[in-house]
Image 1 (cartoon, helix red, strand yellow):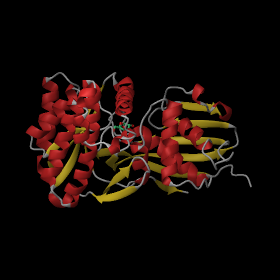
Image 2: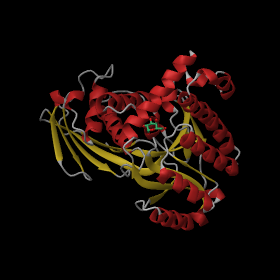
Image 3: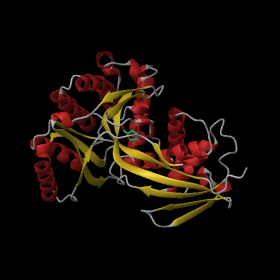
Length: 375
Ligand code: GLA
C-alpha cells in the first residue's frame, strides 16, 4: 500500500544541563533536564524522490534528491541536522529501505539558536522521533539518540557526545535525567523548585567565540590521550586520589583536563543526593565548584560567562555556572524567584559596562522529552 500523503507531527525540547559538563564523551554520568522551548517537525511522505525542507525561522526551501543524502553533500546549514538524521537512521540496522522515500519536512524551531540550549539536538530528535513513528521503525529511545548523535558526528561533523540527544528524547516533566553515558541507562531525579521559591535563571550571554568547534574536539582529544598515557580504559575508573598520585607523570594541561572530568563526575552524584535531600545550599555550592573547574581546569569559559556567573552570585544566587560546550552560550543561576528581576537588571548593566552585547534571560523548568503532536 502506498504511504504517499501519510504524515506525522512530532516535537523535541532543548535542554539545560544541571551538572556533568564535558562528561558525556568522558564516559561518566550527566544530569540534564529538558526545557519548555521545543522544535516541532511536520513530516509528510511525497511522491517526488527528494527531501523538501523548510524552516519557519530560516525561510529558504531546500530540496535534496534522496540519492544525494550523503555526508559529502552536506550544505553547512540547518538542513544538515535533518538530512544527517535521515542518513544515520537509514544506515541503522533493521530500518531497511523504508527511509528511502521522498519527504516534505517543515520545521518550527523554537529553541533559541546559539544559546547553548541544544537547538540542534532538538531538531535531530524531532526528526528521528517522527520517522520512527511514521515508518514503524521500532527503535527505542536509546537507539534513536545514538542515531541522532551519529548523524551529528558523521554527517554534520561535530564530535558531540550523547547527552543532548538522550535528554531531548528521554526527559520526563518535573525531573532531571540522570544518564549513564556508557549504557544509556537512566534514572529520573525529581526536580521541581517551585515549593522552595527558587528558579533556574538561564542567562544567554549572546557570545559565541571562534574556539567553539576546535576547542571542543581539542578538549576531548586531550582527555583521551591522557587516559591512554595512564593506561586507564575509562574516566569512570579514576578518582581524584589516584589521579593526584600520578600527577607528576602528566603534563599540566592533561592533568587539569582530567581533574575537571573526575571531579565533575563526583559532583553529578553529589548533586543527586543534594536534590533528593532538597539541600539547595549544597546544590548552589556544587554549581559554583563546577564553574570554577570549567573555568580554571577545563578552560572552556569566557569573559561573558564569568561575568554572568559573578554578578548572579552578587545578586543573591545560591550558585551559578556556565552550561553546555562553553566559549559562549548560556550560564545558569539557582536563585530565589523574588530576586530574579534584580539579578537580570544587574547582569544587563554589568554587560553594558563591559561593552558586551545585552544578554537574554529565560526561566528553565523541567519539561517533557520528545512526543508526537499529531499522527
Ligand atoms: C555540547 C555537546 C554535548 C556535551 C556538552 C558539554 O553540548 O553537544 O555532547 O559534550 O557540549 O557537556
